[in-house]
Amino acid sequence: MEYATGYRIEEFQCSIAEYKSFLKEQALEFQELNISRTFLLINRMNADIVAYMALVSDSIRLSIDERTTHFPEKIMFPNFPAIKIGKLAVSSIYQQEYKGIGSLMIELARGIAQEVNDSVACKFITVDEDIENDEHVTDFYYKTTLS
Image (cartoon, rainbow, N blue to C red):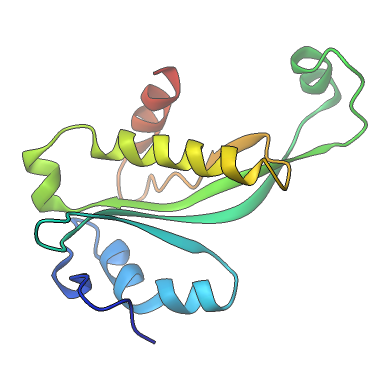
């Protein structure tokens, strides 16, 4: 398994070792197995990977109260379709130089969800908050949903 030539996968630096190894060792395999799709943000000047995110299909279960509060019409489904951001990593090099790359990746996920919604319903975006590796990740996702 190889990525398209030219991308500098091996040089991707991330403060979380698991995210670095996922990109290098598992992302392509997961894509071939239809487990996730990994989207790369590439610096066109030098082919660096600035950031990546792995997206997967998901659903969320809403209680009857949540359904009636958020949907005035009567929705009979207990589960609602979603896209999950399974992994999101920004290069430590670019993270120091530029602010907002993680937020840009969230915006890209929103755009992908809208595209998917043209052919398959997608009501929500969910995230795997990796609080074991970053205790402030919840704050990041909360902040980006407000913008």
